[in-house]
Image (tube, rainbow, N blue to C red):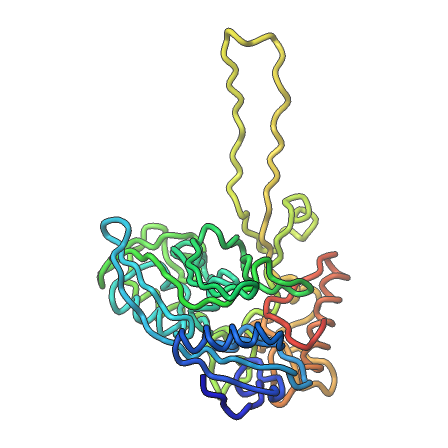
Length: 378
């Protein structure tokens, strides 16, 4: 794999922080990527893999190791598992939004609501990316991985990745290491073949975001265009001329809390149950009934609550920044911590900590960062 002149990670990450690492390689093929990773792991050298750099928050000090840029690309159509479907095997370095554009152009449904999400295909399953009710877990079939522990390449079914809300066994959560340290080489999706015509829009969250009635039918291209417009309005589509997009997207995860805790929050705080409540019905055969009715089963459900709402109602409005800081909340969307131009990682971390503290003081909830933190702490 060709070694390249190290450049500042601020040039390769959408949050625009980070100095140049000690060494840098670019992998244009899967073979190059596998070879370099095996050599790094055998040597025990610190390493960092970068795709689109859209989910990284890198510290100000140089990374003392090797950064590997994944530059692989390509989409391979494959037969679907059932009539009316088609599979796509996508190289890890392929631009995610370019993939979405490809599926829409070819009449393939399943990821159109995730238009405009920055990054690469290989990063998508790591945190189970999603938007407006669609998540990659709904269409992901399998991934090709190389495991750090063994250097072996294998194909792993999506069901074995522990995919949940913005998580998987591959994700490096803040303060912990991945359950399965590995690098994604390719992903395989299975999508519905629906063509260019209008189709019913499944999912209340997507219909609400796009202002559609329950019985509305629109084309995939209509959905993509309107999702891109909606995201751009919130500063969530990358634009070199717009500091509101110089971010890692949503810096804090929407919080997952118990139904009981959710009831302690103001009623107007937006929330979405993660599983429908099913009223348990106990059926006792007449021949087995002894006159005693067992107590009802208590069903505990989890609820997703809006981190953006919590931030705003903790007193931090759009565009908030600390005195003399070059970091600020987006002027369009409070969930994004942005680099307003030349901000250090220290300034961004200071604002993120302040935001966490205000929300915790007001609502008793500690928001968790969504990007992977490298050489920086909150």
